[in-house]
Image 1 (cartoon, rainbow, N blue to C red):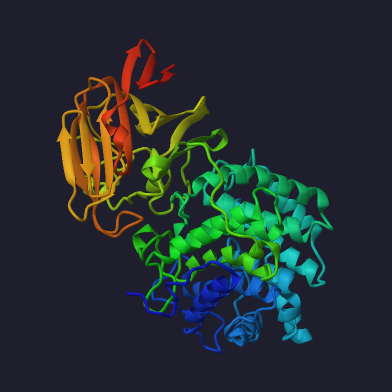
Image 2 (image 1 turned 60 degrees about the horizontal axis):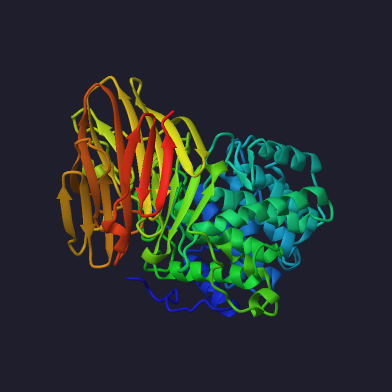
Length: 609
């Protein structure tokens, strides 16, 4: 049960509410301060970069909230500790000096917050530093300039340090800025989208990384770099029209990809939109997106008994964490507090909060191979996707990127083990085994394309098993077609969306379908062709679903494949009851290399060539 260090009934309606929420979050962490140490020791687990850098990370990520507060004239509680911590951490002669960064160092990541701090709040910050202390801070930050870094969103971190230098009167390395932007330009995909490095995922890092940092740069460097700043704003404008579809009317977003423990960093982009004055939607719409999102998170048990953010998504869960998630890592969520830099009298805070603007029920993003579906009547927002995989192979990359669909209402399950179906993360997946209980699913891709609202992917779970998968939408139904060429005998299991298994649901399992009904929801999967597949359900292990800790139950179709070529055609649906259209299942007619799907007055044809 959460302690009242965080006001859980905070309405989060205006700036005063948000300031209170932020101050409470900072104070909860400050309870772990030691005035002689330049960091926070929040828990007894760590990331791959070890305890000392984890402590520094926990300290620096508080600055994403401290900086905008100072910029608006608010003084964070325990401000003197932050001042002393920065002085200690950047003093080479202090026993708790943060140290010189080396290649691929987490300290380079954390320097970005100092760049923002110097850029928007240098006066209230540096008023507490003497000349030697200012020099030590800047010298420490400059040490990131010549260190190798991963070829992804990290390129923005040294750039933001230069932005800080520009605004506090330090020399600026313009060549370094040009070089880092040139590196990132190689993975600009067009239409406002980047990938997080060459051939890397298109996930929340594009919003909370590239465009968040890009709008900071575009706002603070427009005088010295107007052409690039104009381009960054144009790209963010394009991106906003797609990113709007990732959020529900109630404020939650579709969990997808890695680093979900950063939680409300999902709206950091919208905070940057508001702060930068980007003209994409009326200010009241942007305000509503941010505040509804924060209110949704405040209803989730994400804080521990001391009010410290846990590692996890909607509840504490180390199972979903990556190798780089330390106890302080979740505080990148504070990037969403950039709107605190806007004073109480600003137009943003004075405008009334507005609901989401009208959106299409179906939105296709070809450049990312994603289709967003909003079943308004069933209160279900979900996304179909293909072609993404994290080649760094962080924990659970397959579950986080390679499922056929991801849902704001049902989340997704994590793989606990490939031995045993209950641990194998079967929701929204086609899993295959050699009748030995060891399951493989879609992982890396040989090819992918999106055309006319259909996503096609080509993948290979074994060297002698080739699978082509087509994903499309028909009404509220998700349609999947799998053409499988196998040189080995296989067992197959295909799953729909997972539901919480408590209280116990009703299950209707028969030849060709599985349907699960709870007091509030329905999740079902149907086989649409004559292949023999039996409906059944499977229970996952506790703490497998990213949204809820109870065991999840998944509707499945199970079948067997002999050596040869096979076609599996599947329809999936889920949503809040009453789901009236579940009785009308799509029909599939195969004619040569074409399959035509019909549902009432809707028709869709795909070609298998």
